[in-house]
Image 1 (spheres, one colour):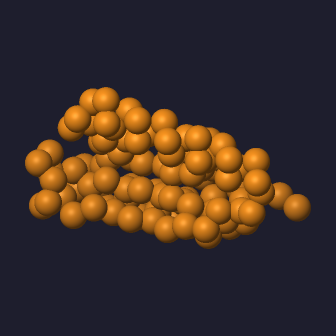
Image 2: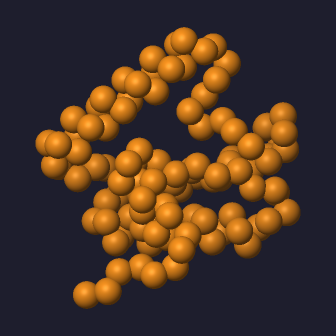
Image 3: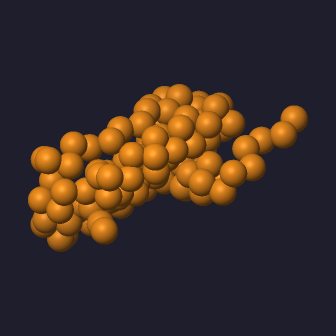
Length: 109
């Protein structure tokens, strides 16, 4: 049984495997790129057997006017090792946010 072969889907799969999310900022005129990112996120989720949500921000509500696309695991697999790893990762992200007010794990260029 073959899996996804396009580079974007594979990139998203790697990110979901490590962090259970993938985030990218787009120019709001890149409607095709935004749609492709969300579609690749759904393909990645199906290939990994995970329930995925995709989200595209409203550029009018952001200071930089960009669209942030987020692909995130909505319902993780029930593997205890994965759950422990993600719990540890979540704590690390929260700790980092508390140490550096104003920073966000989903902010960036």
